[in-house]
Image (tube, rainbow, N blue to C red):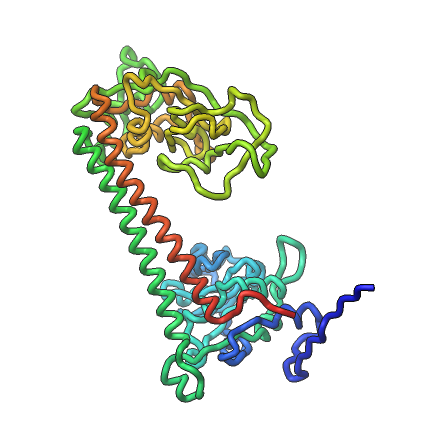
Length: 461
């Protein structure tokens, strides 16, 4: 008979803060043994500075975003409209946690502009002992997967109203490297990894990510400037639009919509003829609805899959129930029609995809327009502006087939000229994709490198 045994897990009596088995196991981090474990409560001192709300004063109130996305102003409110009269005053640099959303990473540091704001007891704040822990190091460690998992284990209650147990939270022990080289020497600890170095390495990766994002913006501007120069497109500014009432004679009134009334102000101009989509489309229809996804089959394109003349490369869906006519043939243009309206992708492969009913599938007149040119021009600012004017709906914008056909683009007669323009734009867009990958990679590596320096990948029990 095969019997599986588990080893005893011994815990010192001095370390017992809670007799719950799940708590004893979940609070035990797998950590770098070079660093001592220190209770969170050793360097967080509860802020108990209370204030009585006065009716004639205006107060700033705070909210803490989930996923460690910051501490921000919720609103400003007159005292007489605030129901809870006894609240807590916060100071810049304090650590704050949302009791309800701590399990979702709702923690952070009070910024300078919220100094003096008020919070209820649902948002406990703490002074940080900066001689033991750097505030940014504390903030970063609360973003790690291990810490969020622990915050979830400390929370109890119904699904949407789980509150963190502050005693459990303050009792958790985290690996604490020395502050810096001087502190390492004083504490006789290794100085290869310090809080200062970890924070600096994180900031360096984030800076590289931000630099890549700035380059993305510059490249996107480069595309617009190239198209404007190459096609002689006029730049339309919001300041060009007449403010206030617009009067139109009834005898000149053919349509009732604002888009028609203001079209002279938004009129597109170019060195090339302006051709409507209706003149370029041979066939236009919607994709198919699909709910039964599978792990294999034909790739099913959703609106979120279609970006700027490219498709997402991961987390996509397949279907294996479809008709042969549902397969998208080569040299077909896709344009998203609902939600995110106006993204486009030119399909060169034959019968590799099916598409959602919220995507237009378009066969082009290839004797007039190059598909890649049309897809790239479709993404330009002067065409996207037309989409905004023709969309309906605010929460879920959409565009009809008839409105899509009204969109106009500058079109050189020479197909080779179109291909040349499209090729240059595509090259720039490829560089944009590479820069975006760098930005994402650096953002991920920033927190991963930080976490890996402190914790091992798996906790063995």
